[in-house]
Structures are given as structure tokens and as C-alpha cells.
Length: 107
Image (cartoon, rainbow, N blue to C red):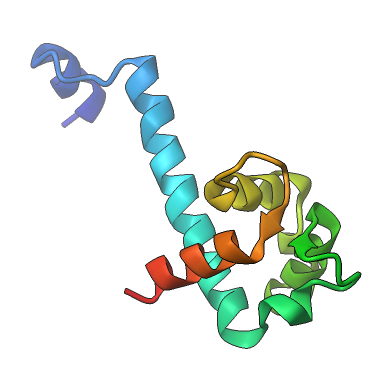
């Protein structure tokens, strides 16, 4: 059985827009899981290395390296993790955004 042919025959093959939405959902789920892992081991204060009240991409990258390993700390992953919880779109994570993601991942 060829799934692609079956989906085409039933007009159920997702279009490109659906594919992008599905990938976005998967990325968001994976990032939330990673935030949960980091949050279970480090506090916001632990992550805020320069004590400026926000987590920069460099600080997030350092947390990923420490908790998940060097190979996980790609620019793409860091950017995706920020995008998932950066509700004010400033490219950084403040403590309110941090608390929101942790409360969602603990449910």
C-alpha cells in the first residue's frame, strides 16, 4: 500500500500550508518539552547569567549545552525555543514568559 497514492485518491493529501502548520506544531511541542527539562533543573535566576532580567539567546544556548548537550545547542533550536514562548516578540525571554511556559508544561 502506498500512503501517498491513497491520500491522493481520496483527496486527503495535505497541501503545503497544512504541512507547515503540522511542522510548526511538532516544533512547538518539542521546544516545550525541552523548556520543561531545563526548567526542572534550573531556575530563571540560574539562567539569567548577566542578571539583566531577561534570557538572551546566548544564555539559552548555554542552558541547552549544560542540560541537553553541546550538539543540541544549534542556532535553529535556540531560535525555535525563544519563538515558542516569546509572547512580546522582543527576541528574549522575560520571567513572566518563563513562568508561563513552565506552568503549561507541568499540566
